[in-house]
Image (tube, rainbow, N blue to C red):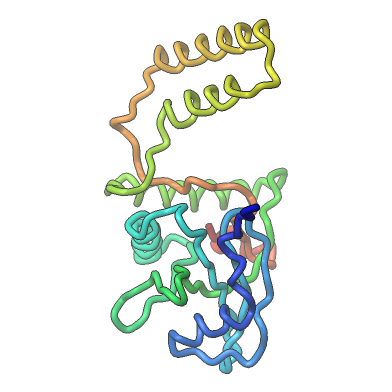
Length: 223
């Protein structure tokens, strides 16, 4: 009987340390695993007491070109003074690294707290940083990243629901009727895929940080 091997089964702490040290760092301690749904993410610190977050990308999920576009967009945002956490680059400007079959990137660890959506100051800061990100995002286009369009957000999701064995025929007809109406309404309201811009495709509270001092929230929100 064959058993599937998890893609990160070989990524034990020693390999995490060795990967980061291959970039010229020295880590006196062990990595600390952080929450991550898809990838593997660890907090490490070097001998200069700098804290880093190392992200190992799930094999087969994204191509090198797609990951590099993400890194380059972050660098572009950082150059435009948008508060983001951009990946570390070596002397050759490389941000996507490899070790023992794994692809990984290194980010500076940034302390902060999640925004409070009921706090007007936090909402104002979030609006500013996301607006600045969109202003930079519309100045260029992705060539390799997946586009968030009507088919991705609705058609594929609907197909996934309809393929479920838990729906009977009456439920399938009702679901199809509602989603077909929704699709028509979106088209009628002028869905314009040609106006797409580069955005943060996973912009939820878990991917945002604010300064720990409330007075600094106006200028220190980080995406």
